[in-house]
Length: 227
Length: 218
Image 1 (tube, one colour):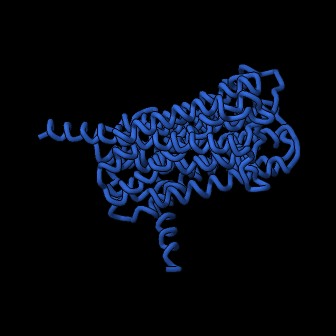
Image 2 (cartoon, each protein chain N blue to C red):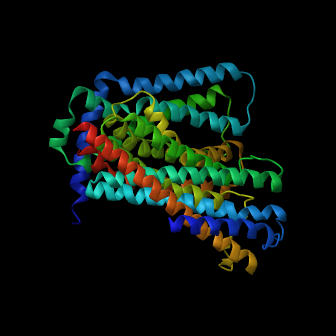
Image 3 (tube, chains in turn cyan, blue):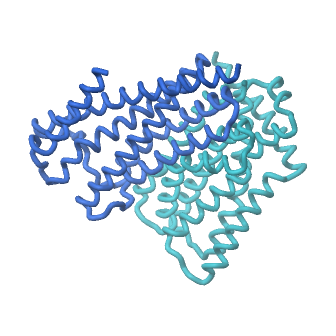
């Protein structure tokens, strides 16, 4: 039994490689994410331009941008499989758990590469200084991980429900709200400065949210995937 | 039939007792009386959502559509009681804090809870096929209920809330005097009875509607 998780992970990595290769050929999902993020960012920056904003507002804006960009791109992995009809082949090639792990890793890669690009740009364009850099990086990392974690299984639900346009946002928003609240609260402290102890409880909450999201997805995905 | 009458009389007695028999609470004054309705409503909401999840798990295990209907009925009842808890909470908040709504962590989390189950109903309405709808919404109901502990139990304790706590964490006891405890527990019983009756009626209705659909399909 002890060796069982490893094949899952290896197969998951294989699916990740396949998805990354497809993504490199078209760059559709990544372009959608980046374009969405940049457009929102430019609009915000353009309209508030010269004003120095409170950390409260900047923190909320950062997560609004990240959340809606994630919604624009993360459903793509599963919807694409349904559209091209490759679902059946994937079902035959792998069990449900490796598929989920692969898709999860792909979404994590996608979202982290987005944050690496967008977050520095965000700080520069809004003239925001970071008081607690390490805590800030940890918050963005855990937050992005949680966004990808909870979105992956919801993306699977949406793709099976016929990929109705706004369904992804409707389903994801309430489930992700606890994560967003914690992330916004931690970002606010990290940007504006404050007690590190305040951030700790937020980071713990983010950490456990991630754990619950991944475990629950692994347990439930089978029921969505094998109809 | 007899059950309904008992619940009705019991509820009436609780309502009268909450105003005449029960003393005004220390610290909260007359506004504290709403506790007899607010707290049981909130507990029934959590109970109904829990039953929605239990039925969803049962559906995924056994694949029988009646579990899906029971999950749906429970989610509906949970939402009704959740709305009641929100409204009574807002009324109390107006009396005690001076504002109907001030985004106290408790108010924030109950809003999110309502939105989650609203999304559940949106998902149900978006899928035509019965089996697929049952399966996908069961998965979503389980995911949704997993956020309940975060919202109801963790968030109000991690972030500073002005909301009074019923259970004293340090002494592990109820912070209530005896008369109040009696009325409160009777109210909890009355609400549970009310929930059981509503659940039964609604479940029978859904079963009949399903059978009607089957007949039309033949």
